[in-house]
Length: 387
Image 1: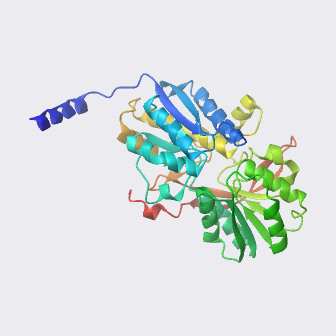
Image 2: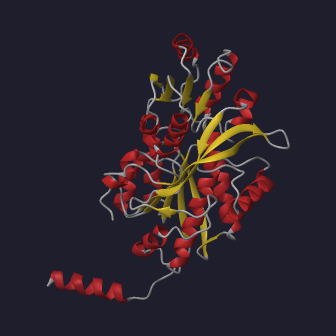
């Protein structure tokens, strides 16, 4: 009889008409304090801009974004996410700069049934064996971007490359991605302390090794310090520096001339030529008076994705299947242009070679030089059981 009552109650619930939410809450976990707080500022500013451009509504429903500071720490990030789920009763989760923070918070969010959209971090585990229907990336899988630099340097027949990355989940993914396409000699593969600021020892080791080129992944403040110290050492004129997620619109104001002429890779830059990106960059600069970074672009897309998905289910955020189906279509105006999702919910998209230089106002920005990959899929989708 108990089973019959449960079945009857479920049948009644299923027969009820869809109910639009009165208010939608989006939980946004990022770093808002310390040296990495500049990244969080870009992400928060872009998310606030997206919501403002939508009239303060998501899918036509009044909405708010609840921000939380992970303080650059996985345990804090998990605690913040847990509070958003239990105390704030958020309908969606997004943000997450750091792969180790996302990995720490991932399972509780996924198991709650809440839809999670990463606005930056893309650890390989979530693209492969730990993929989930209610997880999407608004950015990339970690390996994809350094794969583009590995391919470019391989195509240029470079050899004897010295590699540096911080010792955490994304750092190891970046090195793996680079080596997947670069087949030349690796002079050294060095992992530094996460959050390190002094690189004199590593620079001395590079000088002694005398490689043909250096490839680094050192995001945020780590990149600022390394690139400036590398230029000050005099090595910049002798050994060219290539990077991923190191010299960008969050770090270039502090790095300045030390990055001039360096090469980066990415799926996006402010000069990407499509109507949506032009609209975004113009609106962002008008509102905040600085250039948006890829962190900002991804966050802007994440909010827009959620808006389109909620509109597709007519505000019924309890309809998880409908939301997931809508998100899977990638049917929203992305700043990167049209793209599609792979079976693991990571984007299949273009990646570009970028060069650091000044714009017409004398501001250092990244500029697209060429397309390295067109419609590039990550290397882990085959390990994901979703079809």
